[in-house]
Length: 311
Length: 200
Image (tube, rainbow over all chains, first blue to last red; front, side):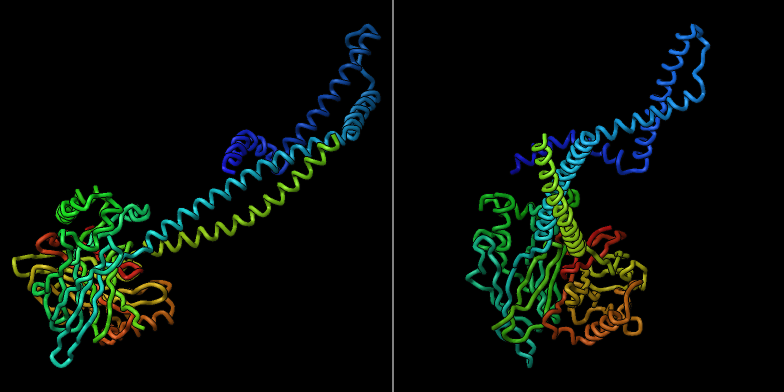
C-alpha cells in the first residue's frame, strides 16, 4: 500500500503542475481571459491571413502590387473565416469533448493524489500529537503514605511510607515507619524537570529524589530523612527510569545519581542535559487515620499528591 | 476508443467519490488536530503568579521582595519580608477545578520556621474576597463567584478537608542550590497541579 502510494506520489510530481495550470486556465478569471484572448487572437490572425492571401490573388490577377480587395469582399472573407472556425469547432466537438474529459481526468487524478497525501499527512500529525499528549499527560508514582494513626489529642501522626520501585513496578516490601508531630504531612523531594521537547519525545522522565518528611508543626530543618534508596543506594523511583532511559547497568546507578545531583549545582551542565528546572518541592496534605496518599511526579513538571480511594 | 472513454469516465467517477470523502474526512482530521493541539497547549500552559528576588541573605536570615501578578500578567501587589532561616519556601494550596488545578499562593516560610508559623500571602492578592491572581479580562461573574468561594475556603483552612485539594510548596535547598541574591525567580503553576521555580 505504501509502495503504491509512493509511486502515485512520484506520478503526481509532474501531474500536479499540469493540473494546477489547467485549473488556472479554466477556473480563474485571468485564465479564462487568457483563453478568450488567445481564441480572439487566433480568429484575428486567421482573418488577416485570408485577407492577405486574397489581396495577393488580386495583385497577381491585375499585375499590380497596389491592387486592393474590394470592401464588400473583405466583409465576406471575414464572415466566412469566422463561420469556418466555428464550423470546425462544431465538427470536432466529440474530439474536443474527449480532450476535455482527459484534462478533467488528469486534474481529478492529481487532486485525488493530493487529497490522499493530505489525508495521510494529517493521520501522521494526529499520531504524533497523540504521542506528545500521552507523554505530557503521564505521571509516575513516587511513594505511598499511609496514616496508621493520627492522635488529635496529642497531635501526632504515625505514618507508613512505601516507595515505588520502578524496576519491579511495585511498592517496596519494607515500609518506613515514621512518627511525627502534626497531621499536615509534607513529603519533600528534589525535583529535576526536563525540557518539554525531551518529554514530548518520550526520551526522558522527570526525576524525583525524595529526602525528608515534616509537618505543619515541624520546620524543614528538623524534618525526618527518608529511606529513599534500595540496598545498592539507588533511589527506588530511579530504577526503571534509568535502565529504560539511559540503558545503564545497575552498578552504574549510583554514579549516575551523583551525576544528577551535579545538575543542581552546575546550571550550564543542566541546560546541556536538557533540564528545565531543579528545585526542592514538598507536597502536603492533612491526614486522618486510615488515609492513603500517593505522591506522583508529573511529566509537565513538579509533584502532586492524591488521596487513594479506599473500598 | 469508446471503451477507453467509458473506462476513463468510470475511473473519474470513482476518483471523484474517493476525493469527496477524503476531503470531508480531512475536515474531521483537522478538527481533531486542533483539539489535540489545544490539549497540549493546556498541559504546557503556565501561570506565573509570583516573581521574587532575594534582597539580602545572611547565614540565618533571608530578606525577599515578591511581586504578584494576575492571569493577564498585570502587577497586582508586592511584599517585602525578612525571615529567619536559610531556605526559602513558597507554599500554595492547589485546588481541583474545571478539569485542571488552581494554585493559590498561601504562605512563605523557611527551613527554620514551621509552616503553621509562616507569613500569610493571601492578604496580598485578596481584593474584597476575590483572589486577584486569577483575574483576567474575559472572566465572567460565575467564575468570579466560584473563585471567591474557593478562596474563602483556602483562607479559612476549610480547603484542607477537600479530597481533591492539596498543598504544594517549592523551595531552594541550602546544601545543594540556594536562591542567589539579585537574581529574579519566577514561580510557575501548571494545570496538572505541579509547581516550578525558574530563574529568569
